[in-house]
Length: 445
Image 1 (cartoon, helix red, strand yellow):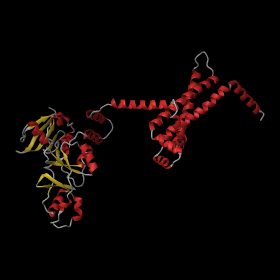
Image 2 (image 1 turned 90 degrees about the vertical axis):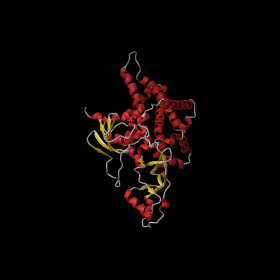
Image 3 (image 1 turned 180 degrees about the horizontal axis):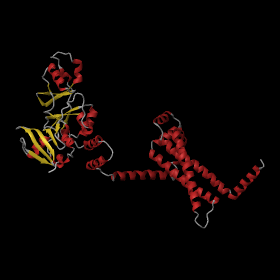
């Protein structure tokens, strides 16, 4: 106990030596550190409120909750005033801390590196620990408590000049910068994206992933005509047949939806859904199945498949009848056809396993003439842009050959395009049936 008066005397002497001004500065510094902690914590608290917390705010009708909701409705203003207050307080802390430190460790005529390191290190450490790290960790766990505590102080600070002026200037300046950034945003073309994807082939990643990415890039540039099933390959039903004949066609076809036409496929009446027939499987041959026909959905040949996908989603449909410029039906397109352009072939237990082509060797393939060009690009792994640029109305391999050569090529006649040689294997007076295709760029002379 004898040492206590001595310690008290030393403290009193130190206090007199430092002066009242220094102790007031230390007191203000402590208050500023508390304010910095509260402001930093409020930044995390306001923007980490969960949906459940926001629901509680809606249910509570006290003034603090109303103020929190008001601030959250203008997040840019809220963030701006928090940053402004935090910066003002931190600058004041640095100035006061330097003044206090100067009285404990006075400057000399020579540059003292030890003094500078201690001053910068101590002030930075105090601001980061007390003014940033600790309050933000606490606020993250007690976001509602801090938000309710700081709602009114932040709200009123945002109304007082010069903070209100700086807030308006900061928000408006940010909007101007964002608008300018949007105007100067880089317009990345499809070619650039394809080139970027091609470069990433050397990086880690499966071939399937790259094919999906390429499908997404080209998705908006593909027409319905390029992926549709042509009318020649479409199974359709004449509305005049009886119910027994209808069931026979359905069993043989194996499809869940089949178009129904009047006299010719150019006049599609609607679509028969097989699931609509399930309650009537035991009906007699004279059953009027036509009352189950659903209205058809018509789309033009040049419609982009990304737009078609949106319409399929909004209308909750899976099949559309493709019509040409004269109103005649060209074929059908399904939701599966659209999705296959992104993820590749989708097969189920009812799909035929017959290949649409035969691979003779690494460079030689045999295709049916009616094979769509888009399938040719996939099998040969070639960029179809050059084909798309020169082709006219054709969308099949046979149509492309006829269009480019100006005639129906006979057996063994050939045509070359972009290092690819097309040799007709089988044809007649009306069409080209089978074609041998050789990739010349991989074949030695």
